[in-house]
Amino acid sequence: MEHSGANSEHLTPGHRAGVSGDGRRLADPQFPADDGTADPLVQQLLASVGAGEVPALSAARALRDWRLLATVVAVLDGVDDSGADKDSHMAVVSVVNEAGEKAMLAFSGADSLTTWNAEGRPVPALGRELARAALDDGASALALDIAGPHPVVLEGPALSALADLLDLNHVSGLVHAALAPLTADGWVEVSVVDSRAQDVGVDVLVVVTGVQGGHPDGRLIEDLARQAARTLMARNDIQRMVPGGLGVTIGT
Image: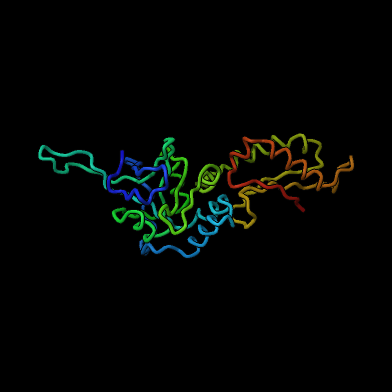
């Protein structure tokens, strides 16, 4: 369904304005004192992504806990016999390209939202909440500040990383199973650590520790860690479960 109030001249080429999320509720407002002003750090981050200075995946991790704005608009459900509006509902706005791929819109602040469409109603939510709503609605991307000042599209692994749906227990089980040939003889131990709260650039760290220094066959702990990394990098199922990145480090 198209939203006739959308300002289509601000849409990226090949997209049309649309609405999605019929009957859907985003998280209840968590920011009662929020005046809609864009955080300068968020805009700086988006500018860095647009300039190619920061990878989209890194930006997605950083935006999980930042307040962003979705936008909802009134959608007419029907008219009465006289042609007057009868029923309407509020719906989350998305854009759809010519291939039918949908992107949910999000904004860093009220100014960038009104630049796109002055009729849009802002709905504040954390970045991870908007990404989850986008995925639930079948969108393949989250389009940030589509009318500027720094438009950025998060899609694929970046959108999944922003949604932050890490199942650490499942990942841990898969990692231990994958590295069982390395740990079976008892010379190496492996632990899986949630590193999202650490500034290490990945969401999960696999810590490889030599129980008695090196291995009897002459391999050093560095060799064993590299072997673990190669094994895990070859496991696409594990990589998909950790879109925010998985790293291997040596324990002490």
